[in-house]
Length: 397
Ligand code: GLY
Image (cartoon, rainbow, N blue to C red; front, side):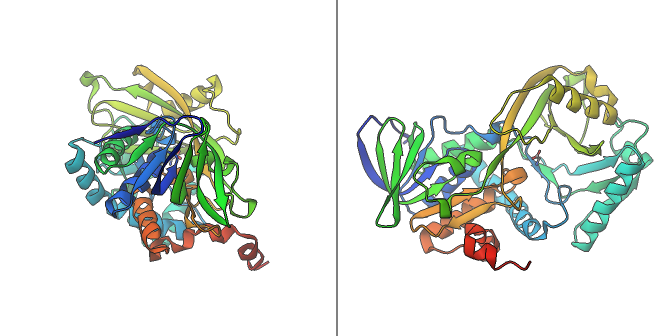
């Protein structure tokens, strides 16, 4: 049965094995997987199921979002993409929900000579990395997606980059947690408690003391702001704002797009993610604006302008939602997973552009670390310890 503890000032809840701070997609998968391993787990969040996943488009874009210098991250992204089918099947069986997982592939296109050169570079990097990606002429791109602008100069067909609906996924994870006996504390984390050099729990804003054998900080871009976390283990995450639009493709228009279509337009990335239910997600800006989540006229204008250059018919569609979220950026664009140098404190944050993609592997890695004290092999490069002072001074100059 679902548990819902409302903490009150000065109250002390029974200790759990694991307290997860943050009930977004990463915190939920961590708590669920921990509970499946037999640990008693609790999630602290004023509104579980919220967070960046409510804004994210849900592209599972290990191949089309590859960047130079991110080869190690690519390995983790591919592992997680490979786990998606079984992860979705398990959650669907458990909850009876359709998660909007669509194995539709992605087409990344170029609109001018500069975009084309950039896409050729990406293609070369993908091939060097052993990834499947096919170069297509503009005509072949339009044959696949007839709504594309006539000026498209070429593109990359990546049949392995799929999508999921992050809102449905999050809702299913809440249900899975409830079924697994995870306790939800609907409150904010005020301060980590530390005793004898060990994390022992969290004090909530309402004053409740939540004791736990281990605490997992999974609060997205807010993970670096919890009071009481010693500076040496404070995660170096920052908010990176993304504005995202949602449009609706009327049934009479279908099929509008059959796969995710993306492009770099004037140096900025734009993508259109078509869902089976007619929702078309257009994203995303990438702005270093601190904690600001305002949807701006400029942001909406740029997204629609770029989307229109790519797919002129997009301006005919009803615009149903505009929203901004905060990606948890880290210094190397990769997540921070597992134990810190403070015993009892683990991290699951810093997923930046890949939170939805990395959800399955994060849940598995954190559950493994909570039970064994060690990260599994594929997650070891993402230890938060890579950012500790000693590790940084060991780097070559
Ligand atoms: N991965 C898509 C984004 O961060 O906008």
